[in-house]
Length: 397
Image (cartoon, rainbow, N blue to C red):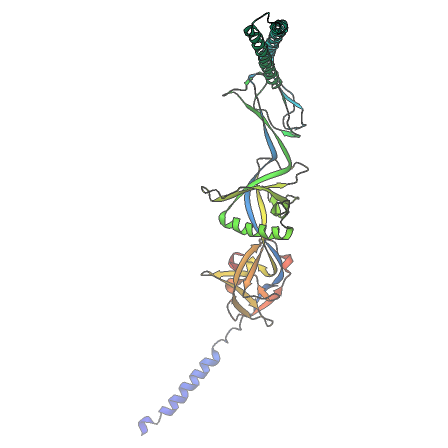
């Protein structure tokens, strides 16, 4: 018994040592303060779902100016790139050879007129004699035939004269419409009117309104077609009403600016192109200042759907994880709740939320990678309108 009498003392000594060590160890660090996280309230508003389509501008009227007769270009009677008026002289082709044809045709008309006068006089002499049986019926028939042949010859000669005068008129090329004319494809002194020399000398275009041709695929066509059907029902079934009369198109220029005038669809194909699988449409946009020129690339924006009271959030508030889209909802106590949502179309820097979120709920828009379900934050409410379009954080996506 004496051998084990010291064991309780050793246990007390051990406990005292552990207590002393515990008293000397540093205290645990305090919990970090909640993160300052910017949040916004989801909004509910009407939204237009749009579709952007790439197109190319052209004049609402584009007319090629052709050399319809051959000859040397004698003069250019306009300033390139300037407006021209209907009936204004544009080009003059050397008329000498065609004037000679006119003179030749005039001579044939004179000759045919003389022959007609002679045959008419002959018939006038023979006809009374035939009535008196002084000449044979054959002589009378021959005189009548010569007279009628002379009439036909005169008509043919006059037609040739008309043709020669028409060809002569082609040496003076006039503008067919009011519009703007471009740079000439031929210069003074060149032989024109036959390949490989220039046949199309220029183009006169009317740029107000400006026309845009664009194509859409079958899927987008169906979406637009449904919209057109609704417009027909809205405007009625009159032949003058329908999608062509609905000003729902916007024109976005190559520099990203928005054309100030809305457009209307004026023409479209009768069928989808089976080779490309696209459907071609044309739309006119007012262009009174002539800012938009033919040949430019632009985007046509069409409204394909209107949603009423859509719930919308900034794009930067949406996080994706393995194909699942999430929103970090902030409670009144600053506690984070991760919410799985279904996304709708994007409109500017906002995204429509089809399900999983209600209007007015507060959501985090930064630091999403650092947030977890149940995290506590110090919310910093900001105005949705103060967010710059496209101001997205890389960690939020």
